[in-house]
Length: 75
Image (cartoon, rainbow, N blue to C red):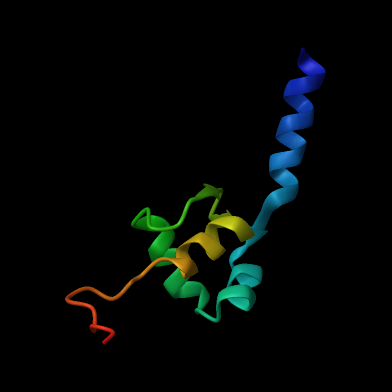
């Protein structure tokens, strides 16, 4: 059972990416990504002083509608 726990921890650790990598994927600055992580808009974790997230979390955020207010009608 301990081997399964270690395997899942290692698998999760492999998926974590730095904000520099997330910035390359998203086109956002690392500062903006840090803000999104603090506000809970992107899933991630802080280890020491560094924020880490996953490529999947960044892509999920990019696929959501982020602009508030009414959306234009398509006629």
